[in-house]
Image (cartoon, rainbow, N blue to C red):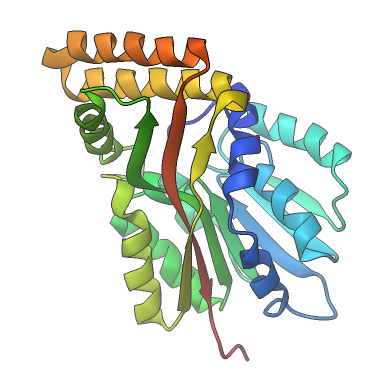
Length: 271
């Protein structure tokens, strides 16, 4: 499984928090067990941002299992959890989900969740996960799934071309097999509905402005690199686009909207 740096995860966390569908937690509260502590499994947990967002909203004690393959990110998670008011036990597990899903025991899980993961995985990988979650009757929340929609202002003649290259790049293998990319939410919706989940989807778009210039700079640079990777013959074109867009960022004019969906899957008749 390819990874992300702690610096990048920290940079994007405020935008993630603003974007997420706040109503998902309220729906989950009604579905999680009482009076015992719910058991929550967070996949690709990174530095624990998903826990920090959800735990206060769920409003009572929950036990968390945070699963990630990067020990340096899990070290950052420990420090972050000490600062957050987490009510319940937090367990960390080192596991490469791309190759080790079969070794992840979900027995007893009441909620399986992930943020910014679904678009990176393959259809086959997600189908296996969904089947495992259904077998233990876990509720599901997948947040911040990229949907292929990017809007940039001021406009540039190569914006549409660049976004097309980025979306082609998103379909490449991120360690799980050919990635679902922008189609991730639609695929998950079909699979979960077949399994009997009631599926709810809401937009969770990043809206980046003058207060997000550092994030914009890294994001735009990453897009240009992705375009050069997928279309190496057009690398000069992507580099020129990058310089023009970085000029907009430097001037404070740049505005970026990145489309995401949050998906909630509920089993309506739990035993």
